[in-house]
Length: 159
Image (cartoon, rainbow, N blue to C red):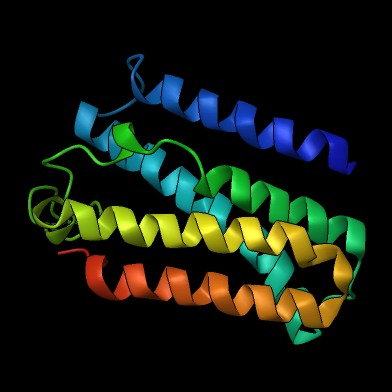
């Protein structure tokens, strides 16, 4: 898909996921929120996978593709996530349906800061993704650190 279509596609997908979550999709309202949240994480993972594959040398570096994936990642990371983190959608309240720990709602400022770290790292990667595989690797190091910090603090097992 040409780069000029990728960011609008991510935006449209995000709107569609959010609309489905609040318009009577399948499952309870809590399950719909979790589904929307999982869709966002899938977008993160998909675009990070493209960039990480390039950084590791598993995928040939392509500047246009790297820029598009970085822009998509930044667009997803900068979305307002207010509707994705509804109280009562943690792994204790929704056994077996999510890995989100209750700590997200107990320490919202720390969670917000970690989320901002990801948005900042993704925005920085947009600026350098076209500068070569080494630049992608460095940027993905920052993105990975932001993801890891949040997952260590706020992602647990499905229980």
